Length: 290
Ligand SMILES: [Zn+2]
Image 1 (cartoon, rainbow, N blue to C red):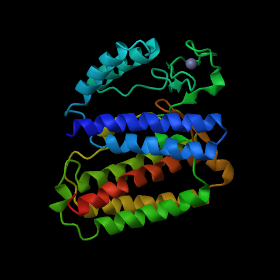
Image 2 (image 1 turned 30 degrees about the horizontal axis):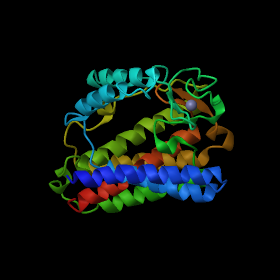
Image 3 (image 1 turned 45 degrees about the vertical axis):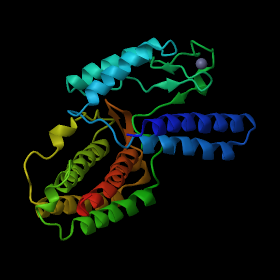
Image 4 (image 1 turned 180 degrees about the vertical axis):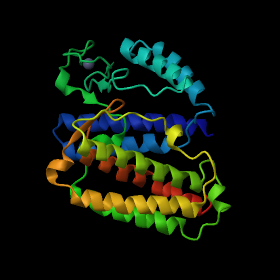
């Protein structure tokens, strides 16, 4: 690990962010976004090597939560939520939205707020509620895709998975810390889960969509690749036909996810195809032995 390089990157991220704000002050929002994107890119690049559960994640959380609670700038609601997060993960619980509201960050002063309902003003600088930035559970929750985009991704993702998995032998499928066989099973079971939820939103009025521990729906025994791929393909054809048959009103039918909040049929199927896109490059890397 090159320590001096890490310090420089942290400093670079701060300089990029400060430039973005300076440009925003000038009303140059289209220039600001370039510097903000560069800062976000550096953050993602430098955090690719991350702690995992059973390999330092809980320890890193506990240490960082303690460090944050020692900072005068950290709000009580943030440090309490961080301690709670350590305990929840240690107990392997999946906290629901009412347990941890989506955090709001004060754009003026950086105060992090987890109150629900949200505070009307920032307790530190009095900035008003609707100027706060909301941090969602995952970055691609922002907005559902268009129907036509979802329809093409339903087909395109299946084709990609088919071509990546084609010709892989069962031994290669077990290599790596998260092997190809398990990624494929993860995609197949995620599809089953999300298709099930989307159908419930069609068949019931505003159902509550129970949350599931990822481990409950993931592989526990070594399924043959051809079997998992076959199930994934068959369900995908069914999902695709079903999705094409829905009216625009159907796409807007809703449900409540206790972990993430309100969903519609369109946002649920959007989530499914975006989640697949998140894993395709990983699947490809395993095929190539990376
Ligand atoms: Zn503030």
